[in-house]
Length: 443
Image (cartoon, rainbow, N blue to C red; front, side):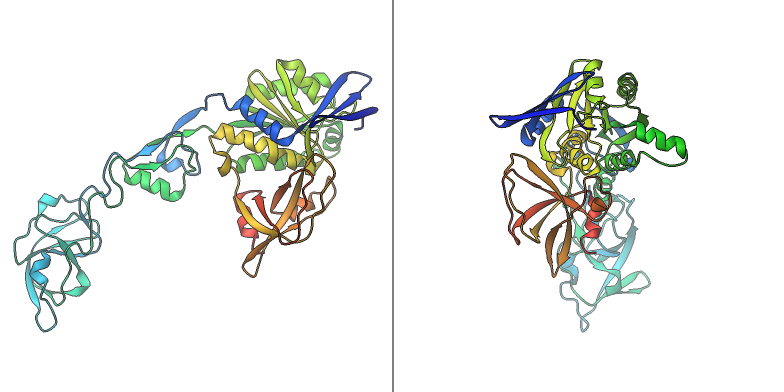
C-alpha cells in the first residue's frame, strides 16, 4: 500500500514525512530507536505488575514476584551423607588392617528419625542411612562398605576424620539467606530448593495476555477460497514468539481493511487481553487503518509511529484505555524487527523480566565486512551463528523483505547503529531469537 505523496526533510536528529491521503491526513514521524524504546518503557513501566500465587510444582519457568529468603537451615540438623555407621572418630583413630577395631551397634537412624532417638558412648556405633540425623555423641560416619558386620558388632579397619561424611546444619543454606531474587526465572533446581525449604506456594508474575490481530482483505479472500488453510501465518509465528517469552497469546483472527471493523476488532482485543498487537495496516496506504483506529478509540492514542530502523520503519505503539497497542508492519522482515525491538521489551515489562534476561545473547565474530550507511537509522540484520573450531561466527542471512526462509535460516540478529560499519572478524553481540536457538549453534 503506497502513499500518494511523500515529502521528507531532516529536522535535528528526527526525520519527518508528511503523507496525504484522500480520506484522511496523518503525520508520520520517524523516531530514533533508543528514543522510541525509552518512551515505551517510560509509558508502561509505571503500571503495577499483577501477580498470582501458584503451587511450587507448577512454577517452572515462571518469573518470581518476590524475594525468597530461607526461614530454616538446610539441613536443619547434622545429617549423614552416606549409608554407614555414626561413630566417635577417636574410637577408630588407630584402626587398620593389622589393628581392626570392634564397635557395638546400639541403634539405627533414618531420615525421618530424630537425633535424640539414639545416642552413642565410647566403643559404640549407630547405623545411619544417607540423610539420617547424626546421633548424639557421634562426630563422623564411616561408609558401610568399609565395615564388616559381626552380629551386633562392626569391624573397622581404617580411621575416619572428625566430620567425615557429615553435612552440618546450615551447611547448604543458612536461615536468613537470600535464595532467589524477585525477577528470577524459576528453573528445575530452583523448584527443588523451594520444596526443600518447605515452601509450598510462591508468588509469580501473572502471564500477560497478548491479543494478536492480523489485518488485510487479501487474507480474508484467501481464507474464503480455502477455509481449512491458516492464512494468517505471520500471526501464528508472532503468537509462538509471544508464548516463548512467557506470555499467553490470544489470536483474534483477521480484521478487514475497514476503519470501523478495525476499531471493533481492537476494542474486542482490549477487553480480552493486556496487550494488543496488530500485524499490517499501519503504513501510509489508503487501506492502512490501524493508526486511525487506535487514535479514534481513546487518548493518548498513538505515541510513536515510525522508527529509524531498517527493516521495521513503520512500527509503532500507542495506548488506549491504559493498555498498550503495538503496530507491527506487514512485511515479514519488518514484522520480526518490530517484534524484537518493541514488542519483546514490552512483554518483558509485563512479565517482570529484567531487560538483560529477555533473550539470550552470544558474542561472535562477524564473518564478512558490513559497510556503513549514510543514514541515521539502525539496521536489524538476521544472522546465523555457527561454531567454527571452537569460536562463534555470525554470518548475515540475506533475503527479501517478505522472505520467510531468511528467518528459517537464521538463529539471531545484530543491531547495527547508524553510520557504523563492521570489519570481518569484529566481535558483535548476537541476540538469539529464543533459548532454543542454542541447539542450532553447532549445526
